Image (cartoon, rainbow, N blue to C red; front, side, top):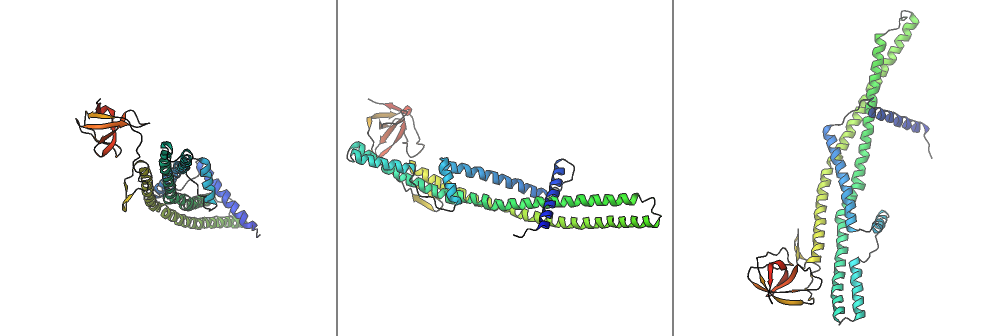
Length: 354
């Protein structure tokens, strides 16, 4: 192992000098070079993007996987670059238990046949849930993680380098200021014994050294200014690239919202779902299940009613419909039938007939 003592000492000296400059700036004892307002604005926006991306990523992970232990397991597999073993969802497990119970109770019994119907639905919904989780992780979570673990790390590295270049620039400014002050002081207060030949030589030598120190400080300042300007430009270009990151996240957000809408639509309806590529049928188009009917009777509609979704039935005042309830239904609602149309209707809009 090649251990370079001189380089180590030099790096330690640079670190210490920067630390002193940083501390004096915080205490108000040293001047600080301010960044360009446009660059400052880009940095502020970038910090906001990073903070909100972290929050959205964490909350989306909680939404998709509420179990903290499961999230930790997924994180470990992801860091090890290994595929997470496929597991049945809770809905699939419930559906499987219902099917096994139906076989135990008898599939031809009313209870057994209902268990089979509901169990199959649960298994299909579980499969849809697994597909939704996979799609969300691929199209939404992965781009967010790539930004935080890739682009943002690069930006942070360049920002730290810019801060170091800024500190070096201010250190050079302070050195030049001190060198000029020492030169001016020496010129304003000559040695009272400089008429003597020996003292005159010493005074001229000291003046030359001070002048040389000023020239050296000016050169270092020019170099530091050039490096600072170059690093500021690199950082600016990277920060301006975050705008394209926003566009990428926007597309991912649309894909995530579409996948979520498709998934939840499969829970409540069997209708087609609109996508950017046209209409496609839901993978869980559930047929209507005939549940036990309780108390079927006629009812007169008192007021017009517009259905709010496909599960409800629109009504016209003074028409007659057939209504009934099913076990577990909200008491403020009934199932209404009018010819081949059927849906939920509010009790307050009806006059029940004997």
